[in-house]
Amino acid sequence: MSAAPTNVVRYDVPNGDFCAYLKGFWKRNLEWRHFGGSFKHLRSTNNVVLIEEDLDAARQPNTQCAASHSTVSSDVYSTYNALQLIARFLRWSFGRTHKKQDLASAYTVQFIPDEQGTFMEWSFEGVTCHGVFKPEASVAILNFCLQESMVTITYRVLDANTMAVCIVDVDSEHTPTIQYGNMYRINPSKYEREPED
Image (cartoon, rainbow, N blue to C red; front, side):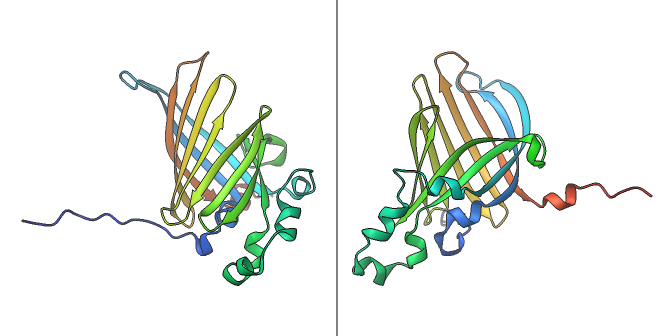
């Protein structure tokens, strides 16, 4: 009798720092299907995602930044690097190209590291949303629990430049969908056209 095959394909995010891993330009390719029944194919989409530091958000009231500096005990300092204790903010923008004028800011996520992984919090359509990154599984889940809809996004880190993505979107007005695909890190300078002579 042979042992069950093991498929341990998991990329360890350096230092478990999901915030640092995410920064940059990404190309997101998704297949859309009905969520349920025959899971009928609806369409395919390609978008550019820019994830960048949002320094203005850190200065907003009710953020964890000031609290991180004032409430940290000496025990915590002995266990964690002081830089990891500071909450950081990343702005997520989406568009058809990598050009700034083609990107629309969607939301800013606050990343709050702790001994369990990284907790995430942001506001979308006036509702506070939450997520978590678990470094031992290299998986992040973002939950948008809105007034009349629920969106759950799962990111599985595959390597230094690739994530698998699955989005389940259910609301009261549209057909529920499941969207799945990959996100690939891109270098925007490679998309610039060379000037013609």
